[in-house]
Amino acid sequence: MFALDAALRSAGVHTYLKYKPDAYTFLEIYRNNPWNIRPSLYISDYNVVTRKSQIRKIGLQPYVWDHKGLPNEEEMGD
Image 1 (spheres, rainbow, N blue to C red):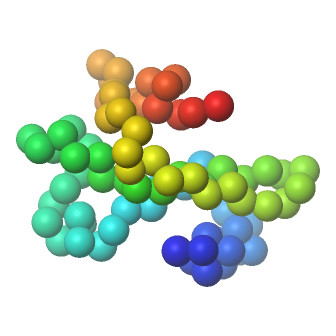
Image 2: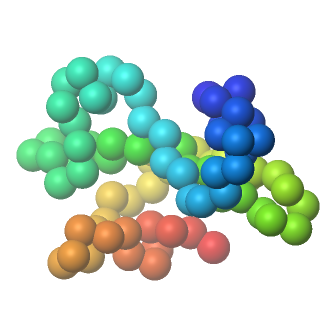
């Protein structure tokens, strides 16, 4: 995953990224699934000043979505 993140960042992708295991894709586990399983286990934020990514594990954080299907502020972290 770290190599993938580095490759995406070096290609100019500087947006907020989420990563999920391939097994979740094969099992069709997406957001708002009936099991309430969080589909993304890691978040990558890119700092344009330092030109570095910060990858955080989010798999154990509460899975909370607002009425539009977007993460609540507590989902985004600090």
